[in-house]
Image 1 (cartoon, rainbow, N blue to C red):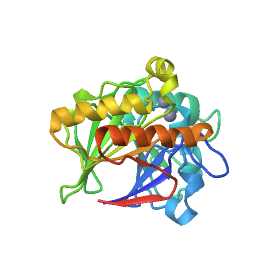
Image 2: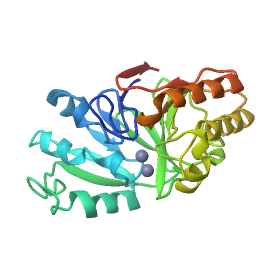
Image 3: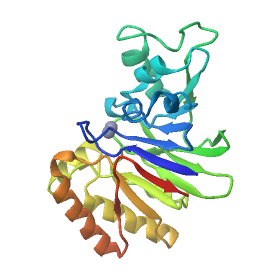
Image 4: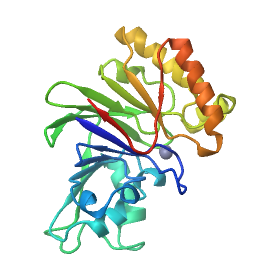
Length: 256
Ligand SMILES: [Zn+2]
Ligand SMILES: [Zn+2]
């Protein structure tokens, strides 16, 4: 399984992109920095997008993905029912731009919306996908993805603390998790349901308690304005849990 981190930040500038992972060239996890990161031919290989939640930084590139798709192809957009309803209502319903769920025709659209249910695994391009609820400010699901050979990773999307419920169910080889702000913003992050490095340390200690090991950990959703301080705080967490935590970046590729 090959995972490419196309977007590792919570904003977009000339050098960073919004959240997006690409798995085996054909499955995107979130669509924040999707089309801006890939040449047309690679965009046209994408078969499915798994949305963690409806926030704009995670669904921004869906319209351009529809615009760039081959006329005869369909991309399946997966997400919680609430996520898909909101994304359709505000982004895809044909008012803001074209409605690709019924274009060029209702029988053969460029996009199909496919609701997922928490805790209900399904098969997608030979990978097993398990949506697990996480605690963000709107209904959100992380995705546990397992290859045929048994290697697996968990992408949380945006989440606040309280992931113990996930650790009871999964034992990934790799964890891709968010940190959105510095430790001094902990109160705000608790309220907005995001993570600081200190909160991440707590979650990883819970993981180790539940599973007796720690997976490789890569952080994303990084704040570009505080990058140096963020690296220092993440390194301090690594010291605390005695394992290096990797800071994600655009173009990072992982072979599992
Ligand atoms: Zn969010
Ligand atoms: Zn976000």
